[in-house]
Image 1 (spheres, rainbow, N blue to C red):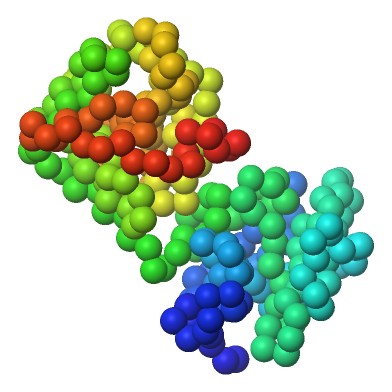
Image 2 (image 1 turned 30 degrees about the vertical axis):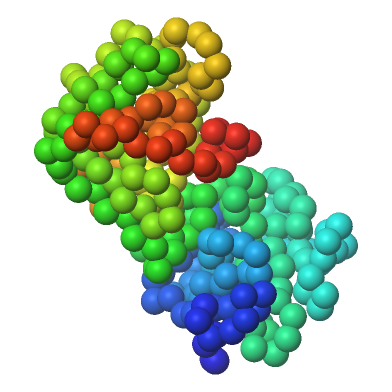
Length: 261
């Protein structure tokens, strides 16, 4: 099939490229998608990719054509998913035009359309990993201090710096270098396609205007970032971080206001 990569079309064009990963998706123990020939699709205005699959690799017998959503894509066909145990509305759709005829995508991004997605034998979360994005977790000897409302809550000379394309550097610190007695546990779990599931979160115990859940840890990170296991990181957006004596500017992102937090 023709390939339209992100550097080959206008910014508002639908772009795609093939993937050689074996991708599967399940719902209620039923394999809905099983494909060794998916493509990655970047829809206009969406910064992260979706997978699209040939119809032959999808359990089309579980899909029922549905009414279009409130803001439909002209020429697209939408489907509900019916496993016999549950019906998920607007779970999948086709793409208009001839180039992607015969391909379907499924909704991700916080909607529980399918229960589990796998690339090869590794479970993936939130959205497919972007092959044009890098995540590097590098041990360092930089001196990192974290302060909240003037109180030093972490001081370390052995951080792991996590560099993720288009995001602020995150500083993962050994627990023994963090004043966890100044923090309280927060009931929060988040998922990241590049790092795994963060099930340990903390809030500032000192009150004030500090938002909740400003620190987190990955007890069982994905293999590519194993080095951050059990370390504690803070949202640069809400705390003061000093690196080698230089105060870092607080970045502006949407993480602390995300509905998925």
